[in-house]
Amino acid sequence: MKFIVSIPGLAHTIPMNHYVPQALRSLGHEVIVFNHERDNWVEKIREKISKPAFLDYKNEQLLQLIDREKPDVFFSIYGRTQTAEIIRKIKSKKILTASWWLNDPFQLGFEAAPAAEYDFYFTNSLYTHDDYRKKGVQNIYFLPVGIMPELHKPMTQRQYKYDVLFAGDHKPNREEILADLVKKGIKVAIMGPWKARKMKYDDILAPYFIKRSFFTPEEMVQVFQQSKIVLNVHTWLDLCDYGVNPRLFEASGSGSFQLCDDKKEISMLFEPQKEVVLYKSPAELPALIEYYLQHDQEREAIAEAAYQRVVRDHTYTQRMQTVLDLIAKSKK
Image 1 (tube, rainbow, N blue to C red):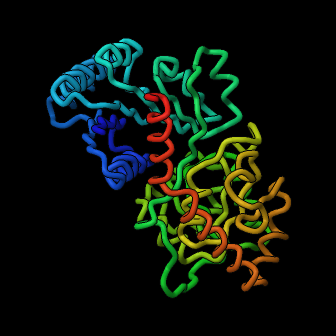
Image 2: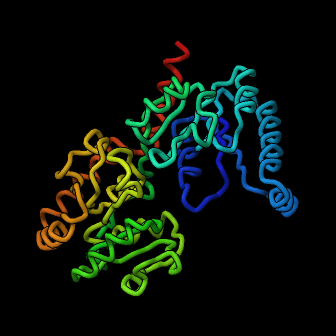
């Protein structure tokens, strides 16, 4: 089949912009990528004058590409760069439409994109789907992210550099948790775009940053490989007990032992405490960290089990095969 994959610009934090096309191509499909990023200085000026007008302009380019290439499927990552009218125009050409929304549960797709217009709508949380159905989104499916085995893989000969590592954006709850660990004498390496002016505990945490800016997927894998424990704190830790983030898979794919706050979907994806160790409350972290730093063999066995699981069940190729299977089923 021929796909046109729409990506929402080259954002630092959206690596699936690249992973989705790669996975579809690996399955033998033709993929044309349409990027909503401004391409030149004229488009930069257009965007500066009016963001909505710029998106209309880019979507006209998209429709021209669709008329020229006549794809079987239009696949939009996030889908917030298209309006309901654009999706209806694409569907009028007898082209199947799909979108993958990755911000559940802290931002639901129907709040930012015309979710109900798509033939297939995928989200990273199973437990938000009733909210979508109330908004008229009927063809909704659970599709978490995964790994790219060519990138996410263990170090051939592991050499530890960090006891505990946290990699991710700044959120007040994350800052509170990390500051509390440092106060208790736990050394936590931190990587991510944390601005001091946003932080309450900058004086405490500043010495622990190994990179205080955006990081590439390659940099993230490297530090995961060098860490005894990767700490995963969902940004919506205090909001709800469901929805899974990319770190759940990326850390395991890097061969790392992971401590992660418990979310309902995780038990469907991993075997808790045998492939990923879950905590209910941040208050549990100091004891868990101390225990697993002292039990190397147990920690490394869990990390290996997690790696075997993601390679077997949680790759981007498998995610795209799920999409293809649903499309094939709908055609029958």
